[in-house]
Length: 357
Image 1 (cartoon, rainbow, N blue to C red):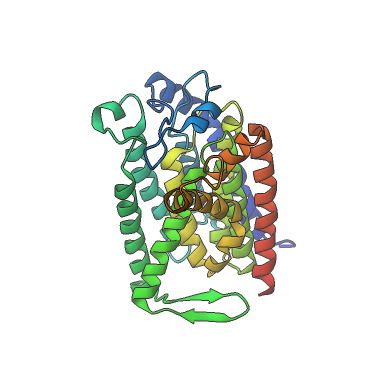
Image 2: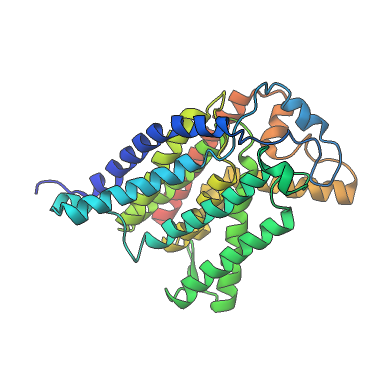
């Protein structure tokens, strides 16, 4: 054969994932609207219980309710695509179909299972938020599971995944750029895994402006796809770009005006798979660079709380950070586009550093 099939293995499934998502999304939108699976009401209180006057003002132009659970498009597209190429390789075995099958025990089983577990756990939280179920099942001010319960759920998932990496895969160290492997040992490695997962899960705060979360997450997974491909982990690379394909299909319907939101079933699924992929590629230490907009957004929430508790005043007009820019006069389109630009520049910077270190 005159050419390598590796680029086809990485890129063709991504295109299929996008097409699957485009097909699924209209049916999902109709289902979500039919069953009123949208949030009960806009946020009127901050996390510390005070009136969220600026946040309410920023959302006062939202005329019609927007359904949650849009993340189903992403993980359903990924799942269908993975099963499709496995089916073709199993029942119609040829060098081409076998090459395109990216499901493998040592590379993609774990992130795929993690994604589905996160999707299920996130869907439960979403159902507690939406009008059709939430008002009957909980009274938490933000809707859904309370913040301590969310931390407990995510930490428990991180504990299981961290233990799996240590006990089953024999991983007890992380690669530090320009230094080498840093041995942590079992307990510290598991704790570090939990902290990374909590950090990636907190990126759910970025799902607050039409098109924002999808664009940022597509940049992050694209970066890890390139890193995996450079490391010869072609199955992981294919999975990363299949996820990007699913995200792009979601974005087709999430750009302003959004037809649905990614919500927890999407964000937790992506967070779990991202954390697993970052460790499988031994590139977790590049995550703060690759996902800098996510890190900055999360830090803005933490710093806002600290400023209000300690200094009795705000650091930002409103948190998370993207809402601060809205309050400063940026339009939603400006916020989204500038976040996308910064996200892809940070992703490229992270890839460059990963390749040279």
